[in-house]
Image (cartoon, rainbow over all chains, first blue to last red; front, side):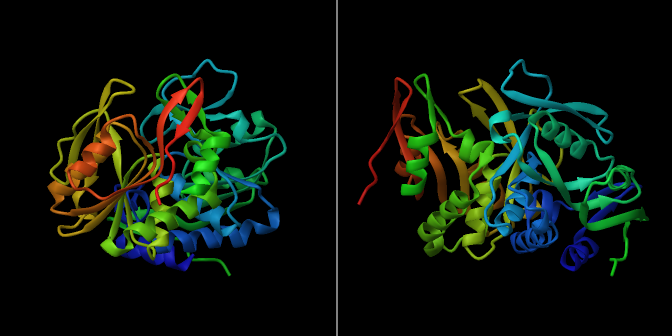
Length: 194
Length: 194
């Protein structure tokens, strides 16, 4: 998506070999105009898959999920919550999410009432790297008897295996920008297809 | 705001003397249509105060801040992040927020670049009870040399002192619904003025 790519090029910061900092327009400060254009891009790609709910994880996925849901006709959004430990509660769906960046494991959890059986779920998240967060959300869907119809990502790290694995498993993934690497602080964006 | 009040009456859950659970349409599952109507209500109230940025705290404030910012012409949103400890970092504005509910103190922090000196700040949050989160955000504004022009709240607990204190201090506060108490699980909403 051209507007996001341009923003990453002009304002994104590459750190080391694999950190893409987009705090200034996506993850701490939000460029609201850009956000809603991103929502429209996801909606355009996934409308044909007829999602009826948008799922994300707190915190930085929430704004993007809201924008996508709005563009799809104000679908409901549900956001999984993060906690350090498993909660003993039958009403809660729970899945582990390992963070390779922080070397920690979180549990994401979701009240099962908010993801009814048979729901058609569009999963939205800010980053896709190893794919752990998406895998966790797909596990929540499976526990709920809901169907993930697609995965919309803002920034995919194309040099990490998450996106490749999802696509090989037959999951429809739309990443609005794909980063192929970082060299001397420069974020290398994959050219857009088509 | 009638639509929010009706949703609280039909779907909100009152627990004990002071817990108002709005998970099913605001804080875990989000009713996106309602969310954007709430954004319009805040925008209508605060447009005359000419805010140029919307400030909130992660996680559940983010969706509401985005809706308000959208209705005000896609203003930027900044969301303060919560952490358990003070970070030694001059680039970070930091303020303590005590939670009377959880009896814990969090630090909220914000990269000072995202709240430029002289900014006119609309503060948005989901709940106003003791007013600690709003007080923390106003402290961040003061450190930044920014001006809070108003506070937009979804649900105010009118039986706790936060809203009264802010109004007595001359702060413009718009709470879309005010809860006066909980009796036997019933949420008592204050009648709307005017």
